[in-house]
Image (cartoon, rainbow, N blue to C red; front, side, top):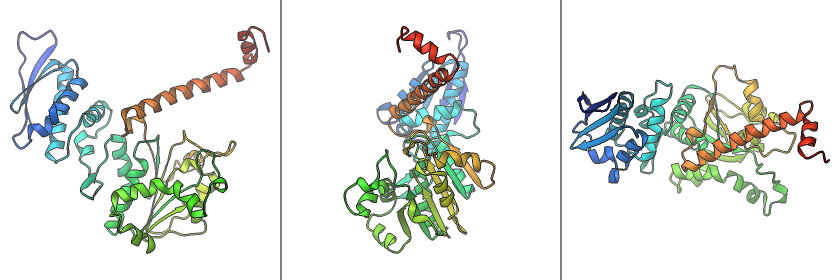
Length: 356
């Protein structure tokens, strides 16, 4: 894509004007979005830059640094559009975040990486953190995907598992999670053992049905090619030629985590996912996902990927909610530490007006 710097005398001090010519093989409607949705997002991302479109030429006017960054953004978006991937305001925001992050990864490289093409659509990473996560799955035997809800930890791992099965890199997929949620106990739930367990495994089934023809799933499960089971069913087994996913791993005890990881057999890959801020274990029980980061941090061929609120791909409010809870946690911990320091009890007594 060509850029033509064209500073003029009537510009504000420190402002420049550049023209960006979009190649003819890039449809402008694909680049600018339906009803100029992408164009509006570019303008929102660079409020100091005036963007004018005439034919296939974009004229950018504003502070030099902002104009330069906006030019790079248009280049990246044009490359994504050329690859046939639809653009959206959300993609623009994520691309701006990548351009301003200290990383060598280009937005176009991230947004056009194909993980799995299935049922008429292609699954791709949407953030830099997600791209690093799927790259780690390709390069390491054991990968831990740790991060808040909505960052695609389980979904992307499932896509890699299905891709490995389709490419005959593995013979089966094993999906498991601990049957512990929000302090509930299976014995108090109605129904048979299967009825009690299925709700805990439902998120894994949902992702599976997104990626594989629903009619073939019962056959694959009956043949043992795909297995979905509670973590307790893994004890005593050795899993060869398998892609194994442990979901909701924050709800494992250290002993369960050790048991699971030692199931690893030859030509197998393991992905462990979880959110250490949402532990549902009984009070006093340490999360195996927290402990394992201390134990295995320096072992080769094991990678820990930490996703953040910037990698959330749900409604934008989910990221804001996660950030708000993190700020609240920091404040709460500071208060708790202050109350435990010498004099803390006296300070609380005085604050309450001397009444106990």
